[in-house]
Amino acid sequence: MTEALDTDSAPRAPRQAGGLERCFVRRPLLFVLVLAGLSTLLFQGSRGLYESTEGRYAECARQSAAAGALWAPVLNGKPHWTKPPVTYMATAAGMAVLGENAWGARIGLSAAFVLTVLIVFRLGTLVWDRRTGAWCALVYAASPFTAGASNALSTDTYLALWMAAAALFFWYSVRGKRLWSALALGAAVGAGFMTKGPVALLALIAVAATYVPLRRRGEAFPVWHLLAGALVFAALGLPWFIVKMVQHPELRDYWILHETIGRNLYGEFDRNPELYKPLTVYGPVLLFGALPWTALVLLRRRGIPWPAGQWLRVTRWPHAAEWLFIVSGILGPLAVFSLSTSRLALYLLPLFVPASLALGKGLDHLVENGALGRRAPLRLAVAVALAVVAAKGVAARVESPHDMRQLSAKLAPALAEFPEHDLLVLGEDELYGLQFYTGERMRALRVEEAQDAVKEGRNTGRAQLVLVKTRLLEKLAPHMDTRVYETRQVTDRWALIIFEAPEAKNGGT
Image (tube, rainbow, N blue to C red; front, side, top):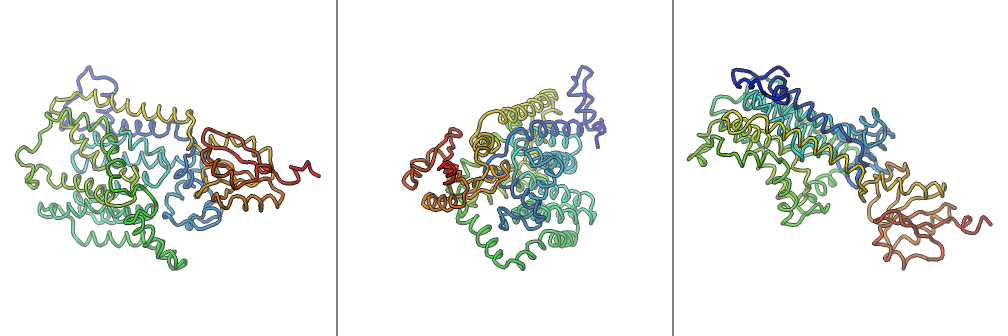
């Protein structure tokens, strides 16, 4: 797979070609994999886990692994059913190898990112040709959004891997008509279902949109192959949900009424449910996520043989079915994500797979038509990779209110000063990332219950350390007896309220 590009389909590189060009022409796959590997691995664990998403996934994986409950994730002693177990398993596996730290928690993301780049290479080869596949993989490997996402612990990088694999096996089925590829398609969608639930089914939008045109062209694989793939999906993706609903009947209502209907129709989890949010959440990702490639293709668009005069006659386009697969693979999921009342930027990550197929084809046209030299995009790719690495290095050193490793280090002196203590946080949510670094279970308190909770804790003879955002201190004061606590500023955003145990306060008398 790493042999030189076919000289029948690509002109020889000029003798004066630089090192980047020679490497890319001779070993295109190796080139993009090394580029992707370096951009995702360098400084991958140098930044602490951010609250809340990264901290929650890492701490849930750590606790579940410790309890031997990765098939039924737990968090702070309670079942945690918000997502299926694959992401927790991958995170726990990384920590088993590299330790319970940010490197271990994120290393699975690096593997998933590099594998996705490999899949995009093969996918571009099947959809277009091998030469174009190299450009498609380069676009995915060196886009700031895709490379940057591999440094953010969540389900999305893993889901992008499975959705890319589903697309790959679909085109294997189209080109080869083999049953195994249809079965692998079902397995990929099933793995995505076990990673993030029903959203993995969005991979089938492009499959459904493209199947009929391919059939008219005489290239579709038998329908019974699809049915066999559906059985594999059902066997892999559904049993965990069915078993857990049988064991815990309340999960049926939770998954259907809350995680599916409430999240996507009623904004139940407050993930940017406002009507204008698709513009502010998804707009920047679409505009800037694949830079510089979108800008390069648009600025040099005259060098691309567009289907002049046939824009509305899609069936007459060259490679009409292939373009329909790409367009439906972008616009279909984008429409679903925009209509949903749960919107986060990383949701769009799987869309960058078909987008890379389009941009890679554009780059190939530009290079082969002489509108763009090969050296320029290769240098841009290296520049993007260096920028991503530099951004990760800077993020590791710049103080951030979201970095729980930094907060843990600032809290360490107080925690050491009071060996017998309870660590509390004033707010609606526990700081799971802080738990990950301190190894202590935290309890979240509402302002109105803080005084009673602290009094109860002090009666056990343990100091009560209450972490509170600085802006909430004024809200806290009316509920606390100022004679029995001390306030310490931890960071610009966080303060620590210390309630010593009565014995310590009285000098042990």
